[in-house]
Each structure stands twice: as C-alpha cells, then as structure tokens.
Image (tube, rainbow, N blue to C red; front, side, top):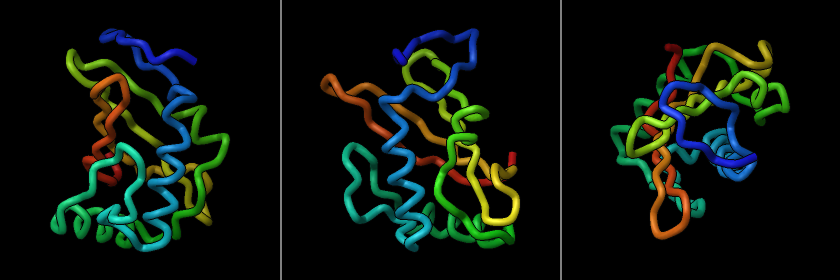
Length: 123
C-alpha cells in the first residue's frame, strides 16, 4: 500500500508503517514510555510527554495489548501539507479496539519516514 499525500482524504495506515506502530505499542506495554530502546526512526519522548501518555493510559482503566488486525480497519492517516497526521486506535484487554488513540506525526527525512508520537488519549 503506497503512502499518499491527499489532504482531502483519510486513508488506511500504510503497510510500510505498521511494524513501527506495533513496536511503539510493545514498548508502551513494557513500560518504556520514553521510547528509549531506540525504535528505528522513532523520536524518543521527553520525560513530561512520556509521563502524560503513561497517566492517560493508566487512567483509561484497561490494559493495553498488542495491536490487532482490527486496528488497521479503523486507524487512519491524512496529509497535512508537510507531514502526515496518524491516528492509531489502540487495543485493550477487555474492549478490543478501544476509544484510546495514539496520535503520531510522520515526516519524510532523507528518503525515510520519521515518527513522532504526540499523544495517547481519548479524543
């Protein structure tokens, strides 16, 4: 699935990005909210951002589990002029795909994609 730059259309998450999001969620499940374990092309988070995300997930009241195939049916991305805004629907133990969403900014850098986790919360 090609990564498109369409400002007027929400599109399904490209296959080329999916493993990165799986890796980020694995880090979060393991308690690495700063993303210090160096996931390729994913920016580490500042302490205050990591703390906010950790608290938001804890306050949600359900345990995160691995992303499922169903995640890709509801998650979207959209071109915003100079970056892609990505919304990943997270999966929890008791709900399956939940209302908890990971917000990510993706940019192109030197022929690769760069990922910045902006937040995790219920929109």
